[in-house]
Image (cartoon, rainbow, N blue to C red; front, top):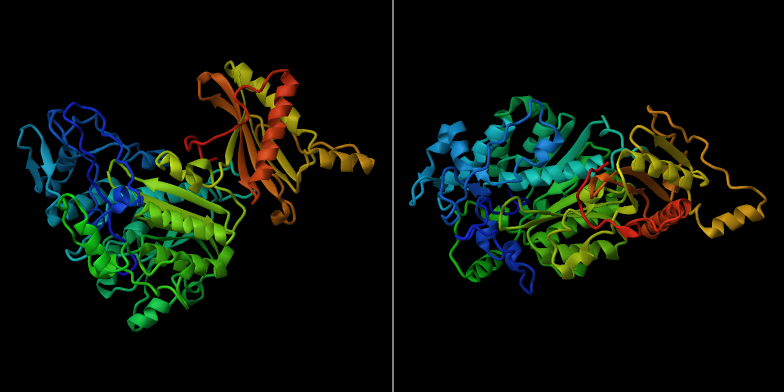
Length: 576
């Protein structure tokens, strides 16, 4: 990338011990950066893919036996893309599919296996071009003097973006399929590879991109890569943001909606330069206790962002003088002016300490709707991603708290509040689920909701409340007014249910929620009722609603509500 694209993460998998044990998790240092990106090795080389080598003895260090080959479905759905790089790469199988990749593989010294020389820039470039061609049908040419992107890592960013957008796409019926409206995104600092627009458009036919950069060499390569993929050309627009002198270019907005002739965007994404200066890059490299194990192909313009620094025009409250914190802080400041003209502002980060600084900045500015993710598809080097929105639509747990499983215990306070809560669990199969669904509807029937619908076939409902309509204060006000609490007028048992009617002023609905009954964590013989926070800014209101339903379910059946009373801390499950 030029000037806006940060260094690439590792693409090689963590070596396994000779005993065949799983690798131990790497401890975080005191500054939280030793694992994430402690030196130039982790950030200036072409990212290394999680590697495996077919036919190799399992006792070889860094070599594992290969699992059965993946067979791609005829139609590649979202689940296929989500799990594409969930395992290690099979270099031998890749070589069989691409002779050019086979040519850069080397036989293992122990015999029977192959490996890739990560110190050879040409081999790294070939790995990236092979993965893009074999897995996505994309053709690219990568210059030797620009960053070589990690395909698994970049793909993880796109997969997370899809969850983020899909789970907040329909403010009135979150269980519906993704909206058919066209999605338009901005890639700030697209780099020579143009990798994010290419990956996004290859997976979603309704996505289009504006891709910006300030480096002439990267822009030339990006245009060449777009020409190599003519089917995607109508959906990707490349814009040069570096024509003025460097000082003027640095002051130009990162998200120039008016200059681009755009009223709004669905998302902004960026993988910013990691370092604040060449001296910082060199100092971090010197701290390494081993030499770099991968080739460095990044240009200084891609890896260093000096930034405006503290003071007028700088991000002084972030105490930054360049690097990724200053760059994303600049994006945050722009977002405060643009606000809802962009649904989601997102950025990939190399350091956990950067995440800490930026989450603190969001909270200081009153931005409560944000999401935090971690990308480490089989690799030792970890990348973080942060997203924020000024809208009220809340992302699903898998998108909002995708970093939950990888944060150190002392850092879990960085996560946004859980958007899901278990209301009750009951033993039993389909019969128990049907009974629990009836009780759930009965618990919600007395509430005076602004909108409510129930899909009996899916045992799932969606509702909106203008305020707390379940609490004692509301009931007392109703009683004093002399009116009985009126139930939901549009509750029904129809299998085919249209999306609920939207209130005239959706922003006035303090809470949007969905409730569903499905199989619990115990499998077929456990029924679970779950609530999801769909809309709103007040998590305490969602918690209050969930507690009301828990108590109503427990009182209705004369039992304690199973495992109710807990928020769901994990990130598994659907994003509906």
